[in-house]
Length: 223
Ligand SMILES: [Zn+2]
Image (cartoon, rainbow, N blue to C red; front, top):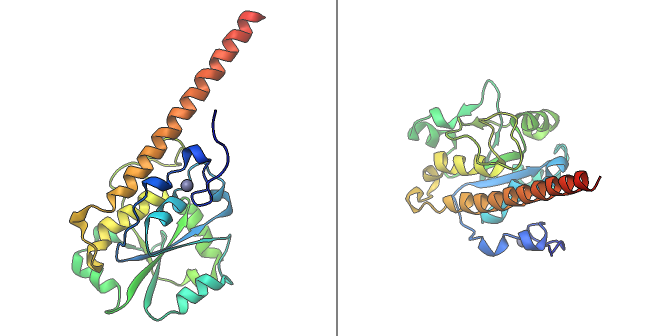
């Protein structure tokens, strides 16, 4: 029998709760994960999963952020250099930059604060367009190395990654510029938890399909 009561932290049904397997780490960059209300209802909310794994990260929900107090407080904090993960002509592609170029992206002594919109690139563009305070921030993007590992939720394009995978890749490309020891591969733990969760979901969907086919078959027989 499935335990459908919800875990208060990961918001998954208790028997899918992945909290026990999480080992939070500091990646040298601060991420602000902006959660669209539509994404919040998804079966795998990978933005929340990423937030739980990143020691210094923020999870904020909403459609637009022009008047969001937490976002504006972060933006006005002089210790940060804020950027947004979003496509656009002026977006700097981390995958195509040298280490020096990446270092020069953020003024000396500032901590990169990267806003990531939980959803597709097009959700990101829309949210940024509608948020006056995010619109003018420097944009960064990257070229995905691998197709998404997301098997449960179909991604609109093959090179479209989940929020967690996008953050993992950003750490891969940018983390060592800000003191994160890439060789520790601590960030790969994000993918391990994600993969295990996706596999569990895929198994559940398979069983569900098998039992509904069986049911149809039995009904046909009975008819
Ligand atoms: Zn949980």
